[in-house]
Amino acid sequence: MLGSGTINHADGPDMRTSFSLLCLTCLALGGCGKGPTVEERALLQIFSGLVAAQTYDEVCNKTDPKSRYDMKDQGNVNEFGNMQLLAGRIGTTRHQRFPQESAADSVKWLTAFHDNVQQRTRSSLEKKGCKSSDTQKDRKVLEKFRTTPPATLNGIIDEQIRQQGASPLPPDAAK
Figure 1 (cartoon, helix red, strand yellow):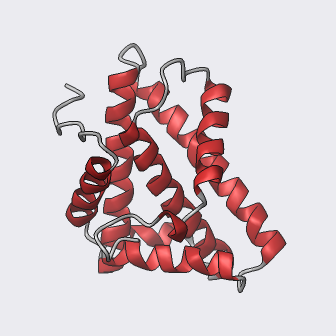
Figure 2: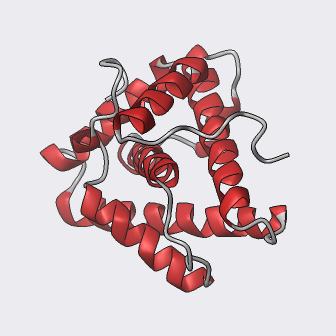
């Protein structure tokens, strides 16, 4: 996924699941009159992979989510930074598509999306168990997010968006 310079969708939730989550969230929160952009789809798929991987870590490794804030651990620094990067870029793309939406509404939307992915992942883990090949993908994805610095992930995301024929938003697009 991350080490190769591209985002391999097979490493995270499958594309159909991610798209279904996006559609359900859009319908639930009443805001997808304009279809999601290439950048939004890419960002939400990657974000979904990170949330699923963190959920795997909490359920299967019994990791306390609060331990992710220990910034003495470089893996935590990368993981936390990648989550912040994704949330910020998703917020920027939402602001472009829904300029009337407040920052609080965007946070509410992303929180609902996060919770939906987390709930589906927990349910899948309960059904398939922590040792299944499907759930082991989440373990590998988590390791990649913990070893990839945010600046590197940012470049990988931009390249993936370009490969899909779109241009990433410039950093100041939300201003």
